[in-house]
Image (cartoon, rainbow, N blue to C red; front, side, top):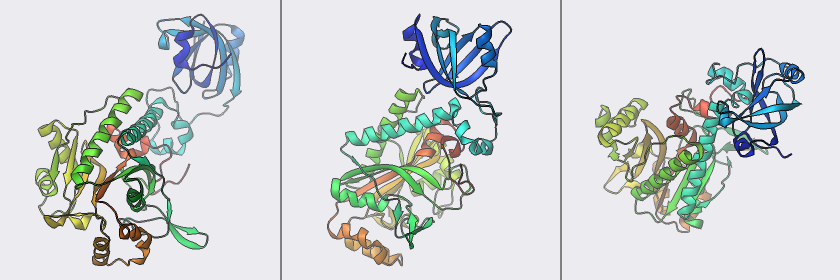
Length: 421
């Protein structure tokens, strides 16, 4: 008999089937015992009444991997309306050590450090698995949306020869005796690929050696990047991002069953100076702090019934060298952030596209041109007006699920203190 999953049992009422999975819980009552088996799809209930099988069950530790051959029997009280009776149990992999915490509880009761120390076990909990499924669905929606709009998926190097992009701290590595670095983003490469495909996207890890020990920062996270050519300005980029988010939300709702907020056809947009005023910040403040972001998120919900709000026109001094300035005021940029429920989850904008402008921008920043030579060549050979964005996947998922710490939606997080497991 071929193994079936827990969600397929209802189609096999009255039949003898084979299931396999992990011992999620055992309930040993006086006259009957219940075995809950967990597989990739969900839970199955096995009823044990035969003394020999019960004795076997009593010796099996939770999280042992087993195979069960049994009859599918109707029972409205059981998960899915069916249970398995007259079972024959075979142990595939026995667990004979105490578990650091129980997985059958609705919520994990261990501290977050304990969960992360025992990630291989904690990730099996239904809540932790659910958050990773949301990440997978959101990524699938990202790919679906952009593929439908003519974007090509690319893969760019994660080992780079220069620590130059964006000014963030980098991780140096020894590359066959030469200095190299883990890539802070695919930004420079995805811009060059606009010259190849016009519209590109990438899903991949990025590395930031910033000494930030907060609930919203990771040293390695997953970035959903896109770049598109032949834009008028950053507003074209924002419109494409809005459409992409709508598909991502719909995909999460369809695949995982999570209730997702509506993405407006046009997300409210606030210029940076006005955002500071709304947030009660000083007019000369140079950036949006977390407190200002929260205030702006509350304003967007109250005034526009929107969980999202764009902040546009950040000061150029707070944006990377490749950012296109506002033609009306070069002190400000054609860049934006997208806030979701009061948290910045996306940074994007229009980029410079002329070679001479890059030379001028780098020179003004006191940067040598040689480390950028391969990058600048793309603009020497012609590049259309373009722009793009990057979504922090873990922040997006944590905010969507109302989870305070991004580590709780990351399989094996890397931060200021953690490099294992």
